[in-house]
Length: 217
Image 1 (cartoon, rainbow, N blue to C red):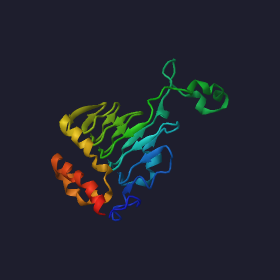
Image 2: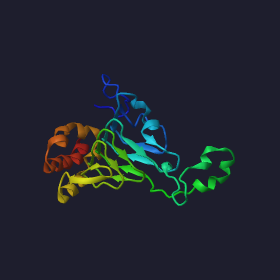
Image 3: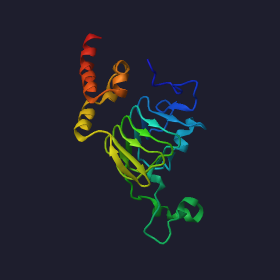
Image 4: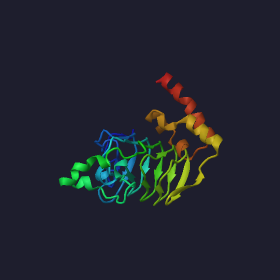
């Protein structure tokens, strides 16, 4: 059975890491089996890919997400004042300028950044502060996501726009009801082929077996 607590799930490919056993910040929450792929140093994810994380806002990433090399999350700490002549954050430089620290506190923020389950990020995708990305979404390579992404939406570009949805509204509702990412890992394992290549109806049939499997265990 695959182990969600192993840092390198593919020992022959150290560029791939599971994020849940890697992250240490209480402000970053990652679900089981979500991974990051980087040929340089994937273990530096928190410092190199979660940027300007100075405030209380959280980064939440669901289960079974795939993060391509260079996927970055810009957090609210990147904000600067824009209501005066200069956007430069003088108080952060210290010295006498630190007396004016009140000028950079309480800047408006968009809250937590939340990524659903089963989301795929292409190479070099960037997510701006406070964005919410729905379950089953795909973020194209190089996309800059500035607004929320619907469940099973595909977005691309800068700023990222909705290219299309992977399923129609009725099927999206059915998939959300199935919520296969919440199944016990044993049931996921038994139905990997259906999850990867089956129809919505076949996935619903597999979901109906979850309770019965628990009763016979």
